[in-house]
Amino acid sequence: MSISQIARSISQSATLKLNETAALMRDKGEPIIHLGGGEPKSKPPLDALVTAAGLLNSGEIRYTPPDGIPALKQAIVRYTEEFYGRAVSPQMVMAAGGAKQAIMVALQAILNPQEEVIFPAPYWVSYPDMARLCGAVPVVVHPEDGTFQPTLRDIEQKVGPYTRAVIINSPNNPSGVMYSEQFIAEIVEFCEKRSLYLIMDDIYHRLIFDGRRPISCYKYAREQGENSKLIVINGVSKQYAMTGFRIGWAVANKLLIAAMTNILGHQTSGPSVLLQQAAVGAINGVQTSVDTLRLTLENNRNVLMDRLKTFSGVKITKPDGTFYCFADFRSFNKDSKKLAEFILDKVRVVTVPGVEFGMDGFLRISFCGTVKDITEGIDRMKWALDPNSPNELYLGNRKLIRDWT
Image (cartoon, rainbow, N blue to C red):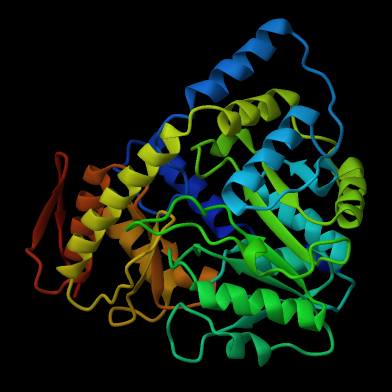
């Protein structure tokens, strides 16, 4: 069978594949603990559910404009003013089927074949393949100091004549690290000077801990008109625990949003009106669910940190936000795929190999599940990897024998 060169260059999403694997094993009765997921366990806000139910009861489930219904665009306008301090018009907003689609459509609107898009490692798994889907070239930046905090110098060294855009994801998936305000200020100024598009993937911007406040890139943007190349991405999936609703958005200059809307119109048309109305309910409704989720995640993070600190040989960087920790397991195995497969095979714990995020030897561990899953999952991993562990472990009624070194 013949398939396109672009199709051959794209691999399956690692995180979605793991979700499938975990679900299949769970269906077979395996005692799976999923520490690889990116899905909060809390319920969506009641305002979202009530709003969606009201529309569903009316039976008026129709097509929508490709860039989103007016009510959602107005809600995003208000959201942007409240949480970013930036007044925008509805013409500067495009709703999409998730933040992922908003990023994809933005890249399709700005990238030509063989042009380059830059992003720091560790990075979200989809960025490289999104660039390849546009016929463009992904360029990874590894911070020189070995930390998860990139510097402007790190970015500058990768910028060349074919560079078209930079993607910044803070707080970062998979590390949970929140980039410094100085770095955000510098990258905004740098991209304006070099006339580069800057995509701010802010999907986790309200899920931050230890009293931190979200950083608004608009605070440092001098170009606020039609020449602005700043694109801000957000959505309801993470902060409102509405992953299955698949509603995200982009805020950018009017001309770019118009081009992105044209692409979206031919690609999928507008997102489901039912799900858009649910997003309106979440954004305009009571915000206590976000605070509750954030506090739960912060507590879960603290439990995970305490557990990992007892794990000899694991190096950790405390997450500032999100619901992920990117832990260094290189002392056990520098091949993160083999390590993740070993842990899944021996103790039925799902993690995501760091190589998928551009850094081998690491594992992404999620703490958006229950405290019980976190503690038991890390205990299982420790038993599997620590040579000083007891010879036996019980998973429910099943006894495991440690027959490896």
